[in-house]
Image (cartoon, rainbow, N blue to C red; front, side, top):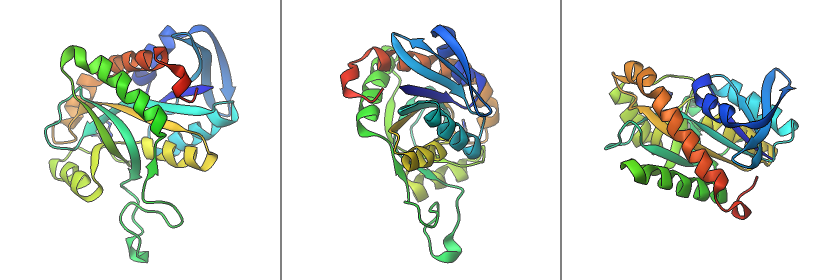
Length: 236
Ligand code: ADE
């Protein structure tokens, strides 16, 4: 069964409103809503902000019966030429706030862990098609590439540029790479979709709340395209 996870209420509210025959469950501390979304049985949950919350929720959803996981939420764009409202589908994810360089590891790499965690190619390919179908209508761009996660809200143009040059990231957020690490450890396929609410620069603190609702609505639309697509090609 597919689990759909978001960090904050706005990121999960649209999908929860559309859930048919909803049943509320508890998985540890997590409230999970199970039901039919666009004809597909799913688990929906809100994990809270940050890497620890994201990793805990991923683990609890797996224990509650999830066999694949889709994370949707907003992010700050860090690549040149991006616009608020653009969509990003993760190929792989890094934890940009990890620093074990004193022990000879590259920035972002934990001891005993890979430099980045790869999203499931079939889920991500399907997500890219679904994002493309939504984006084509109003001229938004869909980007596919690396996402950087850390327990930091980035609101500095120089820090944003460094995340792009040092890590090759397209956007920055606070949960995706923790979901990626936990899901990979559990052997659970996952994908991450982000809509840009800001460009992680000095305007980010104002742009983030201003564009949050619109970006969240857009993601719910992409999820609908994703679920209504050819489900034989994706893990559900
Ligand atoms: N989520 C949305 N915008 C963000 C930013 N600028 N930094 C971290 N997480 C974000």
